[in-house]
Length: 134
Image (cartoon, rainbow, N blue to C red):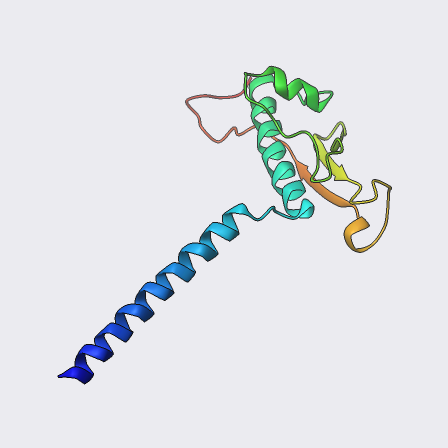
């Protein structure tokens, strides 16, 4: 009988220890800062969506990213993971390019200094016959 009691206490201890380790790991992961490259990618992905919404509303691209902040009271991440402004360009075909010059802030580079570039077309969704775009 004593062996079962001892084994069950060890099992209970192991379960509590495992749960504690998982809790601490989750807490550490949540508190860990994300890499600047990740934050840059997320900021660019969010800007892509905001630019598409702006285009659908105004039938034109914003001249500067600052125009997105005037849509509503929401804060927008207009900087990359290093705190520098994300570069914004577009052409007459409504192709958009968002660029971050990486850690060193200079064009080109490799590794952490490499440019992060997101290119995408922007267009109106016209597939719905009940709401045609004029």
